Image (cartoon, rainbow, N blue to C red; front, side, top):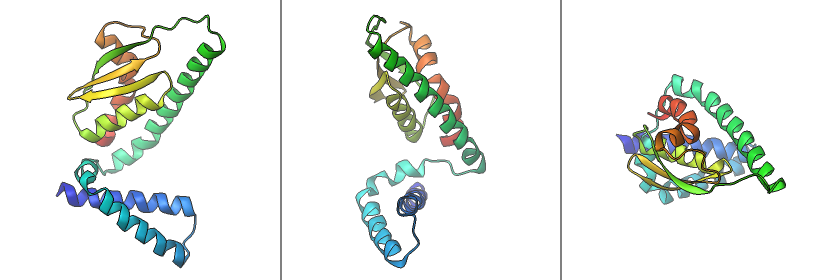
Length: 165
C-alpha cells in the first residue's frame, strides 16, 4: 500500500514541478512531460516506499507554508552569521561535529530535517544513524547533545512531526 501511495505522491509532485517549470499546457509540452514523468518513475522506483511515508492531510498541507517560512527565516539568519564571519575574520569560530538526537521516526522526516540543516549555512549533516544526526557546525556553541539539538534541529522538528509523521 505504501508503494502505491508513493507512486501517486511522486507522480503528483513531479507533474506539479514540470508544470511550474514549463508554465505551459501545450500538447507537446504535456507529451514530453509524460515521457519525463514515466522515465523518472522508472528511475526512482526504489524510493516509492520513502515517498509513501509522507502524510497527505489538510493539516500537513496547512502547516507546510509555516515550515517554509521558518526555513527561510533560519536561512536568512544563518547567511548573515556566516557572511559576518567571512567579512570580519576576527569573529571566533569553533568548528566541530556534534551528535544530535532526533525525535522524528519516519525516514522522510529525517531526510527533510537533514536537508534543512544542511541547506542552512554553517551546518552540514554528515551522517544519519538511526535517531542520531552527525552535524558539522561552524561554531559549536554547546558541548552537550541536548543543547546542540535545541540550537540546531529543534526549530524544525516540531513542524516536521506534524507534516510528515
